[in-house]
Image 1: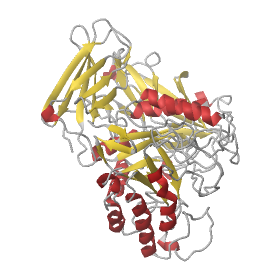
Image 2 (image 1 turned 45 degrees about the horizontal axis):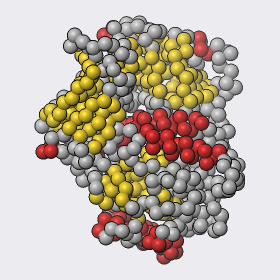
Image 3 (image 1 turned 90 degrees about the vertical axis):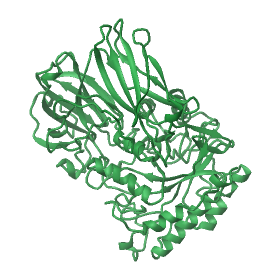
Image 4 (image 1 turned 135 degrees about the horizontal axis):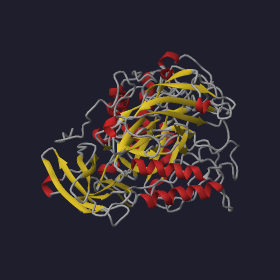
Length: 620
């Protein structure tokens, strides 16, 4: 792992002893000074969403909750899994006196779903969307050395179009839907900044040019200001660049990497560079500085191939839903994030679809360090509450806004090799333009406009509505390897399997395939729980997976080897995604149990996947 010559350090402890999730929540863009606000907050349930009228904004709240865990989770200390139409949080904080002369930013990693934030009774932020980060500038409300009261109200509708991901709209868990998350579920923290300071930088690797392109948005402008950047590796400074900061909204720099210092980021060698940013005043004073990480890698398309650094790398992906027994969508600690990646790698996967959830940024930080390929995805389920028809999907404009917030946050992570804003948008394709058509196209085009360096899949599995999408895919849970081979065998003749051929033949959900790179982005899901191997029936609210349960573990392995073999042997298939990494509540089709303990011979799972892939050895 890369060791850097320097990292920013604070003059005081940013997190008190015993603070849950004490680590820096934004490791790819770090300033020295920050303050973690996780821990005990006052809390109130507001089932009638009448709290504002009842005076909760100005009153002490009756309960206590442990932030950043949601009230439905055990780790929150509440553990109430009923619907919460509104909840309230309250905490008194002191702004460190050492921050004098700077503005204080209040950051929220994620609040589900609609959040309003007040500080000392003044509204400082509103945000809609349960998966993405937002920030409130407190500079005009509270000064360094003063105390302030932070109040948060989170609203979470039980029904209606809303990006929920895998959260159940019934009281109970069922099928592949799980316990809800309401309110704060990622780290809350403070950060001091100069009146003119860096926004989140965009770092684009240029492997062909041997350099990094930096786009440095600034909050404010001062005549004579300059931006500087320094690129470093374990040998020290490799490149430096600077530019005037008073001419452009977002100054741009190029950091050329000397040829003898170029190490492309890849799964075998996930080398990261350090990028140190400085904003310098006309008198030479450094008014803002931050440290970032960057990986030099490329993703490109060549016919049916997706190439990493110019070479075919078969993507052995696993579906990772990012749920935990005690924290639900919030990992209990940072080590749990690392462990999930390590468990996946141990089973022979080299990456994951981050499924129906925008994972917290520290997960991507660890993926960067460990050489783990990921497809960024949005938790779009919740757009349809009607049977499949001609216009059952009703995603809103908010889906587009929230997705772009996710892309902006995660843009600079080299582990992200593709984007997919939608998943399994079941709806008939007709000759009339539906809401789904417009929103799918909007999300695709917005992603392409925002990021020209990665491929974009318009919707995973179905319904494909963008003919020019970079990638095409399908989901297929056929359990018999030979029947699976017959279904997936048409890619050679440009007639691949397209959903819903296996469910309702003759029904059309998607625009036709046009020769793009193709992969089976969900398959397997083999239903296996060794403790319940004798149970029969199909009560999907209690235990379920796909197809008939194997009679024993040997049958599981034969099925797994057969299904993965079909895809590994197809020279036109650039990858696959197996369902799934762990069991999640009643969905018992993981390689590991929900508590991450092994339930299979993982070495045998790994051996099945480490067979050579025709995509890498034969080519199209």
